[in-house]
Structure formats: structure tokens, C-alpha cells
Image: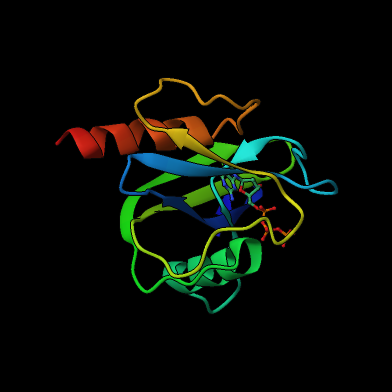
Length: 139
Ligand SMILES: Nc1nc2c([nH]c(=O)n2[C@H]2C[C@H](O)[C@@H](COP(=O)(O)OP(=O)(O)OP(=O)(O)O)O2)c(=O)[nH]1
């Protein structure tokens, strides 16, 4: 699929939410676009994969955890200089294992009640995800 003449990069992103209202951010490793920026864990959906399949795979690869279920939160599009991305964002409340930075990335748990994360910079498209999550938890 494409947006104008730009191909769309489909991405699955997963917000891990713990019982204390904290969510997890990871820092993009060197070598990727926006290296050093903080993001919600996830990555590109490969051909033939469902959003959930991609999320499960990415969370295993990046964090070393296993998930059995996720809740769809929102779909967002963002036009970066390097790519036009469509982010399928899900919330995960249960997982097995302890999240670790398997690709050498730093991780940081953040309180959702705080307006801004204590780490920066955040990928631009991560902000609207956090707003959606706050909205979901208010209802
Ligand atoms: N995971 C994630 N990606 C995001 C977020 N916000 C945002 O704009 N993106 C964009 C950045 C990238 O263009 C794309 C994700 O691709 P990626 O480079 O992390 O994917 P990947 O791990 O499969 O990468 P690759 O090394 O296989 O190329 O989505 C976010 O919060 N989390």
C-alpha cells in the first residue's frame, strides 16, 4: 500500500502496562533511524504476519518476554522524512518473563499519571499513543 507515492511501513507497537500504572519505554539503538530516541517497544510487521504475530515476535526479540493477548488501542499514521509509518498500537497487561534490553537498548518504566516521560527525546508518534492510553484508562 502507499500514501501518495510513498510506501506505507506497517508497524506494531505494544504498550506494556503494569498493575501500578506504569508503562515501558525503550531507547532506539545505534544504527536505526532516530537512534537515541525513546519509543514504545515494537517494530515492522513482516509480510504475512498479523499485527499480533508481529507484536509477539518483536517483544520476544527486543525484550525477551512472551505475550498471549493484547488489546488494540489505536492506529496512527506519521509522515517521517525516512518513512511514512502506520502504527498499530496495542496495550499488554500480562506477559511472562521480565523485560530486558535484548538488543542492548536502555529501558525505562514511566508513570502514566506524569504528563511527560522523565526520559527524552521521545519519537514524535509516541506522544499521541500516550494520550490515547490516558483516555482509555479514564473511561
Ligand atoms: N516501535 C516503535 N516504532 C515507532 C514508534 N513511533 C514511531 O514513529 N515509530 C516508527 C519508527 C520506525 O520508522 C518504525 C518502527 O520501525 P523499527 O525500525 O523500530 O522496526 P524494526 O525493529 O522492525 O527495524 P529493522 O531493524 O528490522 O529495520 O515505526 C514507537 O513508539 N515504537
